[in-house]
Amino acid sequence: MDYTPKQAAHYLHNFTTILHDEEPVKEAGSVNYSIFNQPETVHDLLLKKSNGKFYLVLWGERFSGGTDEVRLELDRKYRNIKIYDPTAGTASVKTFNNTDTILLKLSNHPLIVEL
Image (cartoon, rainbow, N blue to C red; front, side, top):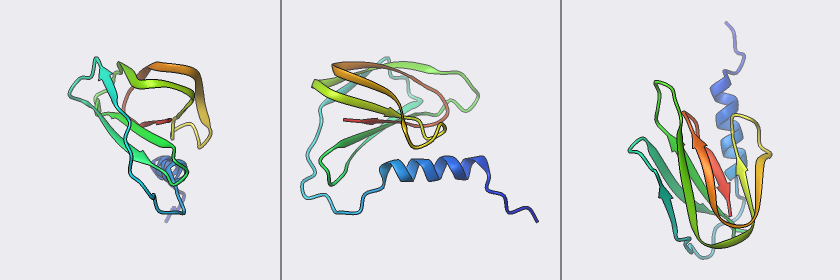
């Protein structure tokens, strides 16, 4: 038997590592945002960590291939926004500064936006 981890296991590990939190969240809070050009295949989930940062998980369900480009508009300008791609590892793959609008290309895996 081959017990070598499958690529999907690495992606899932990266995903849970990025979202990992040791402490409970004291207040839920919220972020107002809009996703423009959002087809039915694109979904989102807003999470919050105990450090006060929000994590917006966006993913597409285009299993037959292709991508969707969406525009994320936030309720205010954020000083530092990081984008994580669990298929690329646990470090951020892009950073945006002092903006309230981001263009994202979604395919068959999630992206995590740290606010």
